[in-house]
Image 1: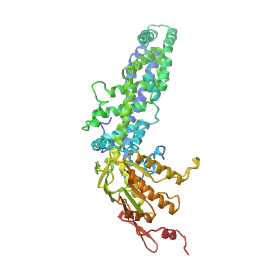
Image 2: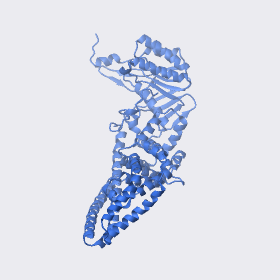
Image 3: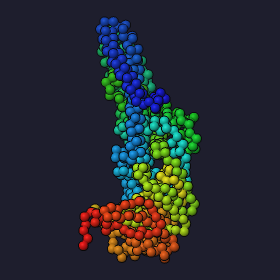
Image 4: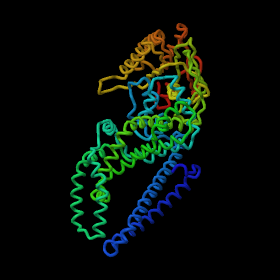
Length: 586
C-alpha cells in the first residue's frame, strides 16, 4: 500500500484510489446479482450451473479484499493530507485543535505544572504525534522523567537519524491515525494469553469430518436426490460438537483487541522490518520485529485475520457455513495454535511500538522545527545558553536571551517591572531543559548544562477543598525543594515571586533566609522578586548575582524589550500600569 504512493502527489493518489474503489464496488455489485441468478437457476432448473458458483464466489471474495485495500489506502492518504495541515498549524503555534493532555497535569510534580507541559497551548500539543493511549502515556512519562544526560544523549542520536526519514515518519503516524479509532484495553486479553488453554485432541475428528461431511451432504442433496431432511440432521449433529467450542470462542471474541489495533500493529511491523537503521538503539528496538526467530508481520497478520473471523461469527453468511461445515472447531484450533506459539510476543511488541510512537513524535517535531542546537552536558555545575527562546511562542515573535551561571554563582536574583518578561524567561529556560532531557534540540543557538534535577515553584494556588491557602501551598512547595536539595540531589530551581502571600517585611526576611539555606544545601537557580531591597544581598553574598528585565515608560505607554540585563532593575512600573487602567492617584 505505502510502496505505491508518491508522497509529492497525495491529492492525485487519493483521487485515483477513490475511482478504483468505486469501480470495484460496481463490479462487485454486478457479480453479486450474477451469483444470485446462477444460484436460483441452478437450484431450480440446471444443477450443473452450480459448479461455477464456487469460482464466482471466489472472485467475489477477491473483489471484496481489493475493495477493502483501496478503502484502507484512501483513509491512509486522507490522514497524510490532514497531517500536512496540522504541521502548518504547529509552525504557526495554533495549537487549540490538538489534544491538550489536561489529565496529565500534576501539581506535586517537580516541574510539570509550571512549565506549560500540558494543557491549552502546551508543549504536549506541540510535540505529540502519538495515536493511542499507550503511546501517549509513554510520551508523558518521558516528559516528566528525571533528568538523565546519558539517556538524553542516546535518544538524541535516535531522534536525529529518524528525523531524516520523512516518508517513514509520515507513514508511521498516518497508519496509526487511519486504523486506531475506538481503542480497547488489552489487559484482559494478555491475561488470557498467559492462561492455560488447550485444544482437546478428540475434536480433530469433527474438525475434519465437518467440511468433508457438509460438502458430501450438499452434493448428495443437489445431484443425487438425497432428502433435505438429512441436512437438518447433519446440522443438529454439528450443533452438539460446536457447543463444545462456542463458549471459549465467545470469551476470546470478547477479550480480543479491536481489529483496527491489530491491523495497525501489522502495518507498523511491516514498515519497521523494511527500514534500515544505523543507530544502535533503533536497531535494538527494530530487532523485536526483524529477527530470524519469528516474523512479526506474518504473526500479527494472522492475528488480524483471526480477530476478524472470531468477532464476525454471528454474521449470517458465516452462520450458514458454520452449521454446514462446523468451521468454529477449525477456528478454535487455529486460535489455540497461534496463542501457544506466539502469545507471549504480543505484549512485548505493543510496549515496543509505544516507544516507536514516542520516537516518531520527537523526530517529527525535530524535522518540522528544523532544530539543530546540540546539547552539551557538562560535568561541572554550570549553565550557559545563547539566544534561548520559548518554543511555544511564534518563532517570528520570540525574543532570544543569553544566560550563564558558572560554578561560583549559586543564585540569580531576578528583578524587573511587571510584564517585563521575568516569568516567561524562567519558563523559557525550564521548558528548554525539558526538551534537552527528552533528547530534543533546545530553542537556542547554544546550550550547555550540568547534571541537575529541575525544580520549579511558580503556580501555587489555593485549594478550598483541602482548606489550603496559596501562601501555605507555596511554603509546602519550598519545603519539598529544600528536602530534595538537602538529600544530596543537585537541584536547579526556578522560583517565581517567592513568598508573595505575606507582608513585605516578612517576605524580605524569609527570602534572605531561604537563599542562604538553598546555598548551603547545594541548590542552584533563579529567584524572581519585586522586592528590590533583596538586590543588596550581592554585597554580602558572593554566590548571588543580580539580573533584571527593564521597561521604558512614556506619557501614555510602557515599552518592553524583554531582554535580560546585568544588575538589579532600576525602576518599576506598577504605578504607571495602575494609572493606565484608570486608577487616579491624589
